[in-house]
Amino acid sequence: MLDVCRASLLLTVYGIKHHILTKSWSEAQSDCLQYLRIESPGRYLSHRYRDNQALKQLIFCIMLNLRIYDPTQNVLRLEAMGQFFNPDKTDTLYVNRTNACLLRVKVAPLVDSSEDSLPYSGVMETLYEVFRCFYHCYGNINTNAPKLPPTVLELEQIQQECARIIGVSERLLDGGLQLRSHPRYTTQEATAKSGGGKVNSK
Image (cartoon, rainbow, N blue to C red; front, side, top):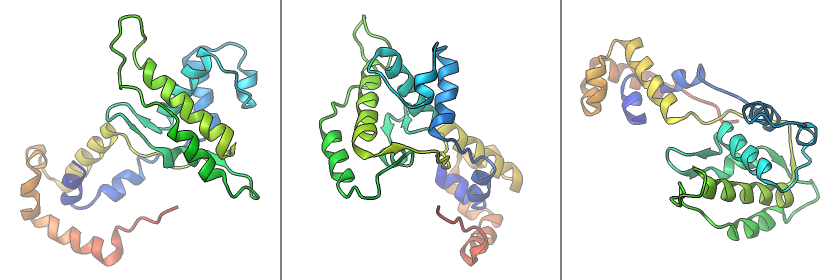
């Protein structure tokens, strides 16, 4: 689908720019404390975490909120997780230590099929253990608010907006292979190659 939007004028770059969402760990945590109606949130706000079920649910919510975990594709983005932690400047072994910890994490199925379990309970345990690896082995939670990766639904919305902007019908968008023959495709592809569609990395 992403190639389809690229073919419809390569406006994905510009479309994503006005859909960019940035959020810090503390902001996501604040959202999740409200969603889960967790009482006495003081210790969480100071990043003092106790090992209990409420914390596991909170971490699961935060990692969904920050798009570290994508349940639609069952994908865990470890590189995204690392953006929210700062290692000590004198610590040269934090990567090795974190990787060794992650190797011990059991990967659970997307949805636990047993009748007594809550949906995503297995994944919740996995994400909690991943969090513990970063929290205890990688570094301290920071205040960074990086750009969050777009969701599948957001990418679809961006593609539809790109198509509307340049006047490509949804029928043509659905038949993405035909878009390369669209007269506006070649014009915009040349513009992008000349530097008009460059995105600077962080």
